[in-house]
Every structure is written in structure tokens, then in C-alpha cells.
Amino acid sequence: MPKANDQKKVLGNFSLLGFQLVLAAVSVSVWAVEWILHARGTLVGVLLGTFITGNVLIFAISATRPVYVKRPRPWNWVVYLLLLMCAGLAGDLLSEVPIYLLLHPPVSFWQEFIGGLPFAMLVTLIVGSLIFAFDDSQARLKAQNEKLQSQVHLGLIEKQAHLSELEQAGEIQMHLLPRETPQLRGFQIACAWQPAKSVSGDYFDVFPVGADKMAVCIADVSGKGMAAALLMANLQASVKAFARDNPSAGAMCARLNAALSDNIAPGRFVTLFYGVLDANTRVMQYENAGHCLPLLVHADGTVDFPAAYSGVLGLFSHWTYSDRDQQLKTGDTLLLLTDGVLEAADEAEEEFGYQRLIQSVVASRASGAHGIRQQVLDDVTAFCHGQFQDDASLIVISVL
Image 1 (tube, rainbow, N blue to C red):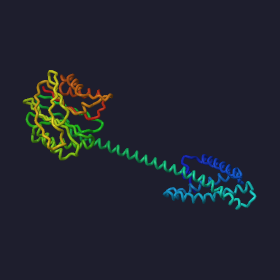
Image 2 (image 1 turned 90 degrees about the horizontal axis):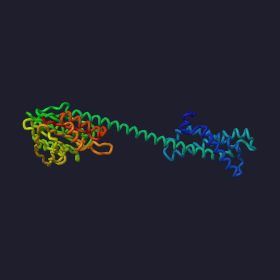
Image 3 (image 1 turned 90 degrees about the vertical axis):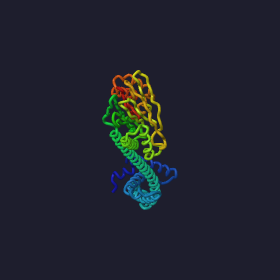
Image 4 (image 1 turned 135 degrees about the horizontal axis):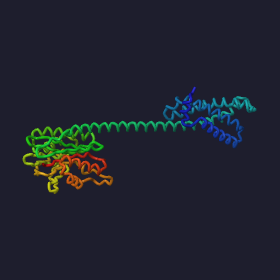
């Protein structure tokens, strides 16, 4: 015996009361056709026959639904039509009993049964087709909803995986950056890193390279996410390994370029500024491999951009790199930075740029490297309302 939830599967959100109203509409329509054709049916008989046949039909469909619903087209229709014929016979047989008892037709019961069979089959075909079409549309809608839910679930899984990857990449980046900034006699050095929403490839480091010398480097790896973090890890390991031989700035960039050109994917590259500060001469030997121009603010307020630079690292192994010297004096301030500082944008998509950076440095240079670092970070953060689209990294060097 079919349960109520079986009938609900057939009718979907359509109530049994609503189904009875449909049967009433069908019975009136059929009676109107019989009246036009001058058939012998009465409205009461048609109503009884339609209601009994229709409810037998819904009962039968509910009971036999598993037989046809999972079959492929067109076999589901074939099986369904056979079930309709059986249900129509049963419905006609059951409906003729009250008709014969209440209306007393002038024929035998079996004659009444045979005579009402076309009517029962017509009702069965009309109602059954409506039920099948409705049931089929409900099944299609359910399948589409399940597919959509599956896609949403898959999207959530992919998003979670992406967030997990970004978290892991961020942890890699954090471990590569110096926890403490070593200092060199005659200089004050301060570093800062403001991460963006998506992990990019900023890298900087400060470490001693021999007596009275300090290496400072800052780099930006192309790309974002885990790929950028892994490339940055490769770069950091290479810098530390090559620095043991205390190469010049140009030699360091040449060795890094050769190593990266052999190992990174096509189209990926690294921009790098590598400098070596000498405490005795106050000269910074450096090479700029396609990185942002450093900003040098002198004690008298004049501004320089040490503009000599070479090609980026990792694209072409035959590119050459040179040693360049920058004399520093007491009161000078040198800023090494990544493009996340310069390209931080406000709501009008105007970038922070060098001019605002110069204003920040000039306004705070009396407070030393640490004060300048904080002033620049505060000004950039306020300008872009804290919405950094790229990592912003700084190395501030004040000459004492």
C-alpha cells in the first residue's frame, strides 16, 4: 500500500485537494464533450467516474512509481502507459458500482462497464498524462537543484582549498622574512612588511657579509599564492647560499639569474635590489635587477633616484649585471621598497606614488629609520584605507 509520502513524490507540492479540483475540471470538460456528441452520460455519472478513476489512478501510480520512474526514455513512457491501462480498467470497474447502484442504468452491469470503458480510458489518459508531465518536471527540477547544490558544494571545497593554500603560502612567506633587523655601525636600518589579501611574492633580508659590511636586498617575485611563495623560498635559499662567498652585488645578481633561469617556469621572473653597505667608507655597492627605483633623500632635502639598473632575474641566462656605487653621507635616508607601496590606490584608483612617499620621508626623517618606516606605513595605509592589493615592503636606511 502506498504511503502518503509516496503520493507526495508523485504530486510534488500539489495538494490532494488541488488534485480533486483538477479532476472536477476534467469531469466537466469530458461531460461537455459527451453532451456535444449527444452521448448518454450524465453529469453525476461523469463526476463519479472521474473522481473514482482519478483517485484509483493516483493510488496506482504511487504504488508502481519505482517500476517506471528509473527507466530510460522512451521505455518509461511504455511502462507508464501499460500501468495506465490497468489502472483505467480498475477505475472503470470500481466507478461503475456506485453508478449502477445509484443511477440504475437500463442495462446490465457488464454492459455498463463495457460502455464506460472508453470514458474511463479517456479520463485515465488525460489525468495520467498530466500527472506524468508534472512528475517528470518535478524530477527534472530536483535533478537540476541537486546538480546546482553539488556545484555549490564543489565551489566551497575549492574555495576552502584555495584559502588553505593562501594560508600555507603566507606562513612560508612569514618564515622567510627576518624576525629581527641586524644593525651596522654608522647606520640605522628598519624593515616593514604589510601583507595584502592575497599572498604575493615580496621578499627582503638584511644580513652581515664580512667585517663591517651588511647586505640589504629586497625582491618581488612574479605571481601570487603558493607558486610565488615557493619561488620566493627558492630565491631566499639561493641568496643565503651565494652570500657565503661574499660576492659583489653584480656577481650576486649574475649567479641568481643563472640559477633561476634554469629552475623557474617560463614567463616567471624576479625583480631584485641587492646592496652591500660598508661601515668604513659609507659606500653602498649595489645592483638593481629590474626592481623599483630606490629613494635617496639627502640631509639638505634634495632627492635622488639611483636610476642605474639591469634586467630582471630568471628570464634570460645570458644577461649581464654590474657593480654600482652610491656614496652615502650623514643625514641621508635611503628607502628600498616594493611596488605595493607605490601602487597602493585610493577609492578613485589614484596611486600613492613617489611624490607622496617623498613627503612622508621628509616629514619624518628627524625620527630616524624606525620613525620613517612607521610614518610611511601609516600614510600609505590611510591613503588606500587599508585595502592593499599587493604586499608592501620597506627597508629604511638612515645614515648616522
